[in-house]
Amino acid sequence: MFEDRKEAGEKLARTLVKYKDKDAYVLAIPKGGVQVGFEIAKFLNAELSILIARKLPLPDEPEAGFGAIAEDGSTFISEYAYKYLPEDTIEKIKQEQIQEINRRINVLREGKPLPDIKDKTVILVDDGLAMGSTMQAAIKLCRNKRAKKIIVAVPVAGVDVAENIGKLADEIAVLEMPVDFYAVAQVYKHWYDVPDEEVLEIMKQWKNDCQR
Image 1 (cartoon, helix red, strand yellow):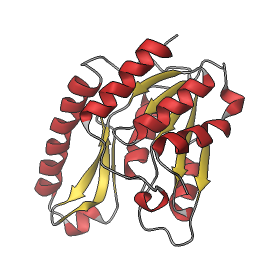
Image 2 (image 1 turned 180 degrees about the vertical axis):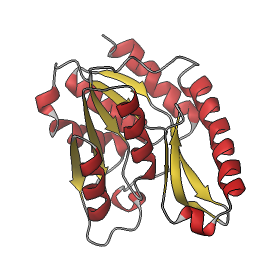
Image 3 (image 1 turned 60 degrees about the vertical axis):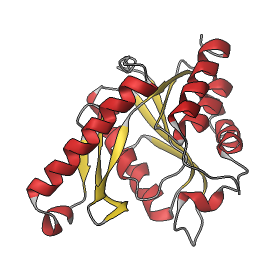
Image 4 (image 1 turned 120 degrees about the horizontal axis):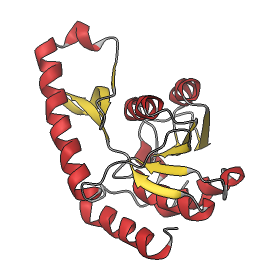
Protein backbone atom coordinates (compact mmCIF):
# COMPACT_ATOMS: atom_id res chain seq x y z
CA MET A 1 0.00 0.00 0.00
CA PHE A 2 2.99 2.30 0.66
CA GLU A 3 6.40 2.32 -0.98
CA ASP A 4 8.03 3.47 2.26
CA ARG A 5 7.49 5.66 5.33
CA LYS A 6 8.17 8.81 3.30
CA GLU A 7 5.30 8.09 0.90
CA ALA A 8 3.03 7.15 3.80
CA GLY A 9 3.81 10.45 5.51
CA GLU A 10 3.17 12.47 2.37
CA LYS A 11 -0.22 10.83 1.86
CA LEU A 12 -1.18 11.11 5.52
CA ALA A 13 -0.21 14.79 5.60
CA ARG A 14 -2.80 15.63 2.96
CA THR A 15 -5.60 14.29 5.17
CA LEU A 16 -4.56 16.80 7.85
CA VAL A 17 -4.60 19.88 5.61
CA LYS A 18 -7.04 21.71 7.92
CA TYR A 19 -4.14 22.03 10.39
CA LYS A 20 -1.83 23.68 7.86
CA ASP A 21 -0.37 26.94 9.25
CA LYS A 22 -2.35 26.46 12.49
CA ASP A 23 0.64 26.41 14.88
CA ALA A 24 0.31 22.67 15.50
CA TYR A 25 2.98 20.49 17.06
CA VAL A 26 3.85 17.18 15.40
CA LEU A 27 5.26 14.74 17.95
CA ALA A 28 6.72 11.68 16.24
CA ILE A 29 7.24 8.40 18.09
CA PRO A 30 10.64 6.93 17.18
CA LYS A 31 11.99 5.37 15.45
CA GLY A 32 9.58 4.46 12.67
CA GLY A 33 7.33 7.45 13.20
CA VAL A 34 10.00 10.10 12.62
CA GLN A 35 10.07 10.01 8.80
CA VAL A 36 6.26 9.99 8.73
CA GLY A 37 6.17 12.89 11.18
CA PHE A 38 8.75 14.84 9.19
CA GLU A 39 6.61 14.70 6.05
CA ILE A 40 3.51 15.79 7.98
CA ALA A 41 5.22 18.67 9.77
CA LYS A 42 6.81 19.89 6.52
CA PHE A 43 3.46 19.87 4.70
CA LEU A 44 1.56 21.53 7.55
CA ASN A 45 4.27 24.09 8.36
CA ALA A 46 4.11 22.76 11.93
CA GLU A 47 6.69 22.26 14.63
CA LEU A 48 8.35 18.83 14.85
CA SER A 49 9.78 17.03 17.84
CA ILE A 50 10.25 13.47 19.06
CA LEU A 51 8.16 11.99 21.86
CA ILE A 52 9.68 8.90 23.43
CA ALA A 53 7.40 6.04 24.43
CA ARG A 54 8.26 2.36 24.68
CA LYS A 55 6.35 -0.89 24.55
CA LEU A 56 6.58 -3.09 27.64
CA PRO A 57 7.54 -6.43 26.05
CA LEU A 58 6.47 -9.82 27.34
CA PRO A 59 9.44 -11.68 28.86
CA ASP A 60 9.10 -14.75 26.62
CA GLU A 61 7.75 -12.97 23.53
CA PRO A 62 9.42 -9.57 23.12
CA GLU A 63 7.59 -8.75 19.88
CA ALA A 64 4.35 -8.75 21.87
CA GLY A 65 3.67 -6.40 24.77
CA PHE A 66 1.48 -5.96 27.81
CA GLY A 67 1.59 -2.17 27.90
CA ALA A 68 3.79 0.86 27.33
CA ILE A 69 5.46 3.73 29.15
CA ALA A 70 6.15 7.30 27.98
CA GLU A 71 9.05 9.53 28.89
CA ASP A 72 7.18 11.36 31.67
CA GLY A 73 6.27 8.05 33.33
CA SER A 74 2.75 7.89 31.85
CA THR A 75 1.98 4.18 31.73
CA PHE A 76 -0.61 1.97 30.11
CA ILE A 77 -0.77 -1.66 31.26
CA SER A 78 -3.26 -4.17 29.86
CA GLU A 79 -5.73 -5.45 32.43
CA TYR A 80 -4.61 -9.04 31.91
CA ALA A 81 -0.93 -8.30 32.71
CA TYR A 82 -1.26 -8.60 36.49
CA LYS A 83 -3.00 -11.96 36.09
CA TYR A 84 -0.07 -13.50 34.24
CA LEU A 85 3.00 -11.53 35.33
CA PRO A 86 4.34 -10.99 38.86
CA GLU A 87 4.51 -7.36 39.91
CA ASP A 88 8.28 -7.52 40.32
CA THR A 89 8.61 -8.76 36.71
CA ILE A 90 6.45 -5.89 35.47
CA GLU A 91 8.53 -3.40 37.45
CA LYS A 92 11.79 -4.87 36.13
CA ILE A 93 10.59 -4.56 32.54
CA LYS A 94 9.44 -0.98 33.18
CA GLN A 95 12.87 -0.05 34.53
CA GLU A 96 14.58 -1.59 31.50
CA GLN A 97 12.41 0.48 29.18
CA ILE A 98 12.96 3.64 31.21
CA GLN A 99 16.69 3.16 30.61
CA GLU A 100 16.07 2.91 26.86
CA ILE A 101 13.78 5.96 27.00
CA ASN A 102 16.55 7.96 28.68
CA ARG A 103 19.05 6.75 26.08
CA ARG A 104 16.76 7.84 23.25
CA ILE A 105 16.17 11.25 24.82
CA ASN A 106 19.93 11.76 25.08
CA VAL A 107 20.76 10.44 21.61
CA LEU A 108 17.75 11.14 19.39
CA ARG A 109 16.67 14.42 21.01
CA GLU A 110 20.16 15.40 22.13
CA GLY A 111 19.00 15.63 25.73
CA LYS A 112 16.57 18.45 25.00
CA PRO A 113 13.16 18.56 26.73
CA LEU A 114 9.87 18.14 24.90
CA PRO A 115 8.45 21.46 23.70
CA ASP A 116 5.78 23.04 25.88
CA ILE A 117 2.49 21.73 24.46
CA LYS A 118 0.13 23.27 27.01
CA ASP A 119 -2.94 24.64 25.17
CA LYS A 120 -1.48 23.49 21.84
CA THR A 121 -2.86 21.26 19.10
CA VAL A 122 -0.72 18.13 19.05
CA ILE A 123 -0.50 15.58 16.23
CA LEU A 124 0.90 12.27 17.49
CA VAL A 125 2.49 10.29 14.68
CA ASP A 126 3.76 6.73 14.28
CA ASP A 127 4.27 4.49 11.24
CA GLY A 128 1.30 2.37 12.29
CA LEU A 129 -0.65 0.98 15.22
CA ALA A 130 -0.43 -2.70 16.05
CA MET A 131 -1.67 -3.10 19.63
CA GLY A 132 -1.77 0.66 20.22
CA SER A 133 -0.15 0.48 23.66
CA THR A 134 2.64 2.93 22.87
CA MET A 135 0.16 5.43 21.47
CA GLN A 136 -2.00 5.13 24.59
CA ALA A 137 0.98 6.06 26.77
CA ALA A 138 1.79 8.97 24.44
CA ILE A 139 -1.79 10.24 24.64
CA LYS A 140 -1.60 10.09 28.45
CA LEU A 141 1.57 12.17 28.37
CA CYS A 142 -0.11 14.82 26.21
CA ARG A 143 -3.14 14.91 28.54
CA ASN A 144 -0.81 15.31 31.52
CA LYS A 145 0.91 18.21 29.76
CA ARG A 146 -2.52 19.78 29.08
CA ALA A 147 -2.50 19.81 25.30
CA LYS A 148 -5.57 21.56 23.94
CA LYS A 149 -6.30 18.98 21.24
CA ILE A 150 -4.73 15.59 20.49
CA ILE A 151 -4.86 14.14 16.98
CA VAL A 152 -3.43 10.68 16.32
CA ALA A 153 -2.18 10.25 12.75
CA VAL A 154 -0.96 6.89 11.42
CA PRO A 155 -0.80 5.29 7.97
CA VAL A 156 -2.25 1.97 9.13
CA ALA A 157 -4.08 0.40 12.07
CA GLY A 158 -6.38 -2.47 12.87
CA VAL A 159 -10.06 -1.58 13.00
CA ASP A 160 -10.51 -2.34 16.71
CA VAL A 161 -7.32 -0.56 17.74
CA ALA A 162 -8.20 2.51 15.67
CA GLU A 163 -11.62 2.63 17.30
CA ASN A 164 -10.11 2.38 20.78
CA ILE A 165 -7.44 5.02 20.14
CA GLY A 166 -10.06 7.26 18.54
CA LYS A 167 -11.97 7.28 21.83
CA LEU A 168 -8.86 8.34 23.78
CA ALA A 169 -7.74 11.05 21.37
CA ASP A 170 -9.78 14.01 20.15
CA GLU A 171 -9.38 12.91 16.54
CA ILE A 172 -7.72 10.10 14.59
CA ALA A 173 -6.50 9.95 11.00
CA VAL A 174 -5.78 6.50 9.52
CA LEU A 175 -5.20 5.83 5.83
CA GLU A 176 -5.55 2.04 5.77
CA MET A 177 -7.36 -0.45 8.02
CA PRO A 178 -6.84 -3.86 6.42
CA VAL A 179 -9.35 -6.56 7.26
CA ASP A 180 -6.59 -9.14 7.61
CA PHE A 181 -4.20 -7.01 9.66
CA TYR A 182 -1.37 -8.73 11.52
CA ALA A 183 1.62 -6.34 11.42
CA VAL A 184 2.44 -2.75 10.50
CA ALA A 185 5.15 -3.97 8.13
CA GLN A 186 2.62 -5.65 5.82
CA VAL A 187 1.57 -2.34 4.23
CA TYR A 188 5.11 -1.18 3.38
CA LYS A 189 7.05 -2.38 0.34
CA HIS A 190 10.32 -1.24 1.90
CA TRP A 191 10.28 -1.98 5.63
CA TYR A 192 13.24 -2.07 8.02
CA ASP A 193 14.13 -1.23 11.58
CA VAL A 194 15.19 2.40 11.57
CA PRO A 195 18.67 3.03 13.05
CA ASP A 196 19.50 5.94 15.33
CA GLU A 197 21.62 7.50 12.59
CA GLU A 198 18.66 7.81 10.23
CA VAL A 199 16.54 9.52 12.89
CA LEU A 200 19.34 11.99 13.56
CA GLU A 201 19.72 12.68 9.84
CA ILE A 202 15.98 13.36 9.47
CA MET A 203 16.03 15.76 12.41
CA LYS A 204 19.15 17.46 11.03
CA GLN A 205 17.33 17.94 7.71
CA TRP A 206 14.36 19.38 9.61
CA LYS A 207 16.57 21.83 11.46
CA ASN A 208 18.36 22.94 8.29
CA ASP A 209 15.46 23.11 5.86
CA CYS A 210 12.14 23.36 7.67
CA GLN A 211 12.49 24.73 11.20
CA ARG A 212 10.59 27.96 11.60
